[in-house]
Image (cartoon, rainbow, N blue to C red; front, side, top):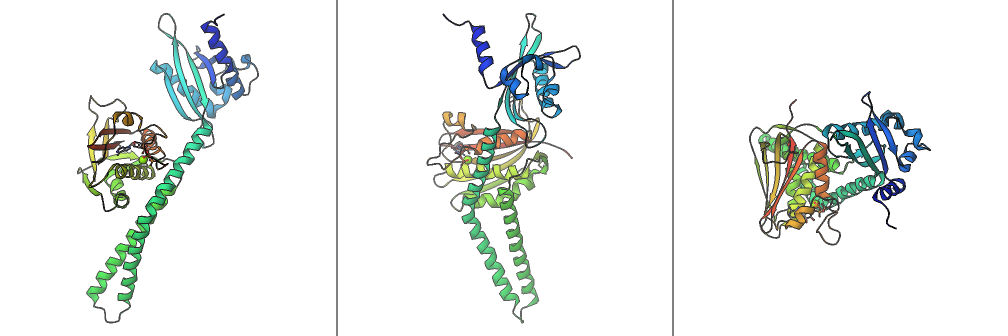
Length: 367
Ligand SMILES: Nc1ncnc2c1ncn2[C@@H]1O[C@H](COP(=O)(O)OP(=O)(O)OP(=O)(O)O)[C@@H](O)[C@H]1O
Ligand SMILES: [Mg+2]
């Protein structure tokens, strides 16, 4: 005997480990549970469905977590279409992470009758991917360290010979000034280098702030040049009067390092990399999720480019074409996530045999 569709769904509803529920808007404008599955009961610590029916998510889960759920429901209701949420509940770092879908159901007149929700706890996966991202950062740091050791050696050599000169009693004052200046410059380079390295390795929370984009990009040029080595030429071109934009410095630097590494890995011989920065206004042909006004920072290479099937998957987490575990496939996906967090967007263009251009679009902001 075939099982009727309604019965099949009822069985699934009862057995799935995802929290599933149906809420309706009450006369007071609050959404209240009408139907909940056993997984939802377990998460809210209730034994029977009638313990939860009639409650709002805030009443069922408390203000901290319930408010996020109510916001998501309200979002699906006001948009009139399915709403997808991935994130941590509550405002602290220790809340559970959920991946949830909220789907408006309409009555025969087309009016939204209620919202169907399905939420999966992905806390463990999310923690794991955060740890992987950190590991990836450390690996990139390891890659950098050869070049960095070389830079530090140069700095130490400059300082050492400066001290030797300064120890001479008969040194002309003009020469002494030059030596002081050079030694100071070397010290500043060393300090900048350590600062970049520590910020790169740090496991900080995202703090989007207003940033001067030219300063943001300039401050990582030194590291990018190191990453590319002598074999690949780095060209830089910034438009004058770049806007200020909303960004997180630490994440931005990691993103640029990842893009430059990708470019380096795609270049076989005689390659070049171009870093450009331009003010842009969203064109009608641009995707809707681009900010209305943004600064576009592009990293372009003339490497091997991506075939369409790689392009399609490039920003998926863990997608990598690099062999022998050379790539975690978390570079571009991490960048996409960071840009999403700061209200920006990612643009990728690529042609096989010609090269690739990956742009960070940072939303314009004013003080
Ligand atoms: N500039 C580029 N040129 C050609 N292909 C690229 C470029 N950037 C990314 N790709 C492709 O996209 C894939 C995913 O890139 P992503 O940065 O996410 O991971 P990965 O570079 O493979 O790994 P990891 O970043 O951990 O080193 C790459 O494996 C590569 O196939
Ligand atoms: Mg990468």
